[in-house]
Image: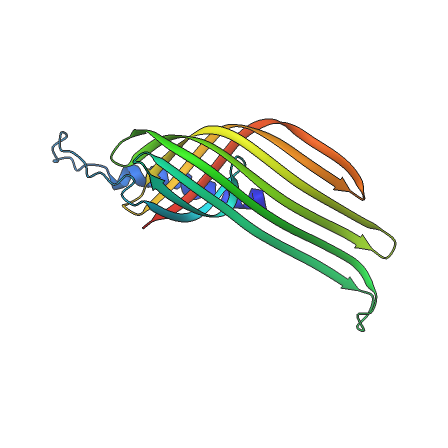
Length: 204
């Protein structure tokens, strides 16, 4: 699920760079010294969709303040269940799989460099996810419960397609701590990783 969201977001972000060049390209007869219209961060509220292994994935809302700062919240609830019965009476379950995922993240951005249509920013973010996976049948049962805590920092680039729509891509460094409970056997996974993220926003 996370990989699919990332692919769907990464492709539009890639095309955004090409689109932005065409959108703001100058005609051959235009004065090269003429100033372009500034369309960067004209609106203080943004809604969108995002994938980030630093600060979470799903739907997002961001609020700009103090000119160069932005606080963003991201969240998603994902539920998937599959049940198979032995016959049409549906009395005996032969197999069942279930995946319930809750994700919530927060990110603070600070703009460093801006042009008329792009912006480079620094970020610090964190997210928490709660994932419950069940795979059971008549003679077996396996349940994995994970709590993931992630913290990281990074740099990002936002490209404005027009005054309201923008696409962004960021990378950084993060730390993950995961509590695992598998068939009542506890465990932990932890480590540092490369942080990646992409998103699309609408300003209002």
